[in-house]
Length: 378
Image (cartoon, rainbow, N blue to C red; front, side):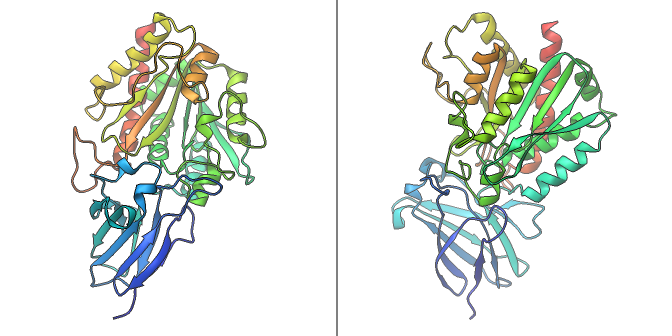
């Protein structure tokens, strides 16, 4: 019986092949360049038709978020369009923590990933399609360490300055799927919510803050191993030009509302994190966040408020993170939106778990909540 072949030398690919025997392979995740972070994987297996693949990813107790593996299901696709769950189990005692994936593909090639990938080619398609839409202008905010553009799409004629940005952490591909759904709504001339938002707001949308990490197959860092969401208090051209470019853009326009879109490894739910611990916070300032959160919870059953991160005590917020820095710097409503790698336990889907389709729908729902939030402030 011939051995299967494992490949990851492509956009966002990440895996190390330790051994292959027939239809079984032992694998490991490559660390982010110049960093100890590792969690994202994306590879393909070929020569697999008619056989059940048994793929074991080892050493995962040493990954960035080992609590992300229990209850998690790998995503698999044979057409790179529809991503389903593969049979997945986790044994923390085996080989330093082993994720075992079993899948019998119908075709000869199957792709496996931590979450449905969002390639740089799809990113450029998204930017191009939006840039030719009526009323949309394109702006390059700056360049990454690898020389890639930090793309920003701008639209709307209103006074409220709204910044939406995603994939500071490149392996959190949920965030750019969310962006695709949000941009599809915003650029739809027949969508009444989009039309109302465009009259009230000027949108600044950065679909991918970290193109280098995205292309390199990183979980959390840029080309220099820097976690961009710990750079917002002091970004530099040497270490974090991506954050410097975005923050400079915000300084030019001001910010009334900001959403930083992410994915969370361990918590099987959709939630938001705010800015409770920033210096000088007033009840009036925080009310913008709590009111938006309540609106979104009412508008979609995919969102909830029971599960989430521990709230910072007064004056103890981490000011190097974008949400706290932006909320404090501009006195605005800001938040971090988190989506799961696992299923959404409040509304489970055994076939796909949390999926690109639901990310996109959440993007649309968040815009609907934003319009209601703006109307309530009038």
